[in-house]
Image 1: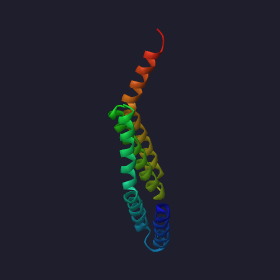
Image 2: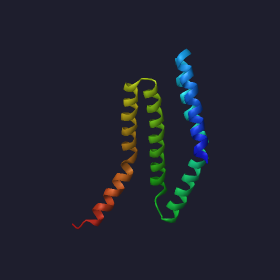
Image 3: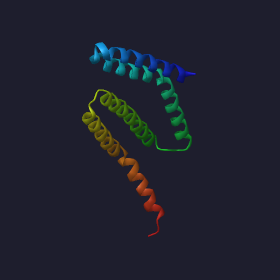
Image 4: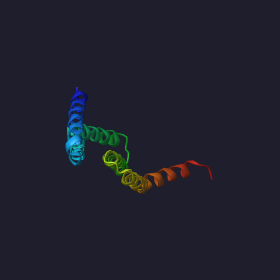
Length: 129
């Protein structure tokens, strides 16, 4: 059960952070970042498996590989920005966190334009004149 390992890493890190905040609060954020990276590396093989499965399904369904690549990038942006937002909020920097959220949403919308335009073209073809 990998989730138990992830929870164990998180709880150990939490205890270290709580103890560090009493004596060296500036180091607590480093432990938080390190924990996030460690958990991300721990599940990286699962992510590659998921991406391979999605590529396999897309090729069988004759889905444009470009669209799948865009969707995977958008998902990655969402995960990474959520990680950064959480770190900023933990550090007490809510203003920076909100800017990251806004920036990532704009990037996601910009990246999704080819998919949206393709979808609109299909809708226009279906609709009667």
